[in-house]
Length: 197
Image 1 (cartoon, one colour):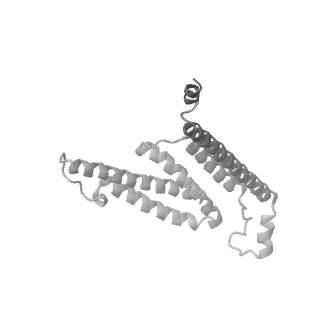
Image 2 (cartoon, helix red, strand yellow; image 1 turned 135 degrees about the horizontal axis):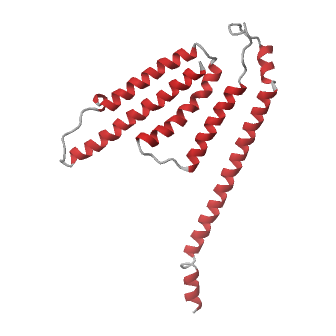
Image 3 (tube, rainbow, N blue to C red; image 1 turned 45 degrees about the vertical axis):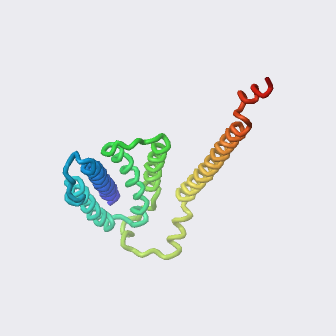
């Protein structure tokens, strides 16, 4: 069920990017028609790329429905980040969008997080798939060492990311303030030298 969901999520991203490609081509064609260099294009929902993307997207939703019947929802909900990773890659391939280093790191982090969820998710024992669990069984799973370790790692990463973003914001703010002070002081060192002379 998990692999089916990943396949459906990949097709979802592909369908959306193909529809975006159709809209980009539509805008370019409308600009050309506005300049008098071509005929006005048909509506976007009549273009082949949009129709192909729509069919792929709808097929992906049907595939995801099948995966929902085979895998617990708590696991499938964590696989939505895979769609974002695929969307980034497909946008680079089909739309020519640039992937920055920060985006590449984010994609790698999403993939690693998805892998951690899949490897540490609670797995039902034989004959336990269709049984309803009581509150004690659910609380017991929250106390598993794997869950506690993963929670600690994620909280640490979130704290480090927050501190990094705060320090980067402060350093950029100080640099901007220094540049503004230098510019407001009469043109910086050159102006100071001229005033001294």
